[in-house]
Every structure is written in structure tokens, then in C-alpha cells.
Length: 85
Image (spheres, rainbow, N blue to C red):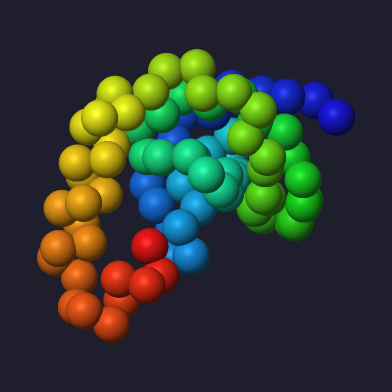
């Protein structure tokens, strides 16, 4: 299949990052908002699609900063939601 470059702008319920490509919403699991990625469509729907992450072309944060952000987010969640992260 064809790969394409995508700027991810938000995080969706369920954890996939999302962006727009050719006026459709594309959900990309295992990516973060602010990243520019190469992706490949894995499940095509009418107005949206799911894509596999092929490559992170530009990261928003360095790895150490990502870990700090995740740690801070866990501290802000109620105790019963920690097991889901």
C-alpha cells in the first residue's frame, strides 16, 4: 500500500493520535500529537481511516521529555485509572 506523511494534531479516545490527510481523519496508534509521521492505511472507512505507523519523521518531544509527560499525567489521574496507562 501507499505511505503518506501526516501531521498529528490531537489524541483520540482510546489513545490513537489523529491528523487529517486529504480531508479525512486518520487515526494512528502508538504516535503522539505534534509528531510528523509516515503512515500506511490499515483500515479504510468512508470519512476516516486507521493507519499503521511506519516512521516518525519529526518528534515533538525527546524521549526523556515524553517519559516526564507520561509520569505527570499518571499523577493527575484518579488512582483507579493508573492501570490503563
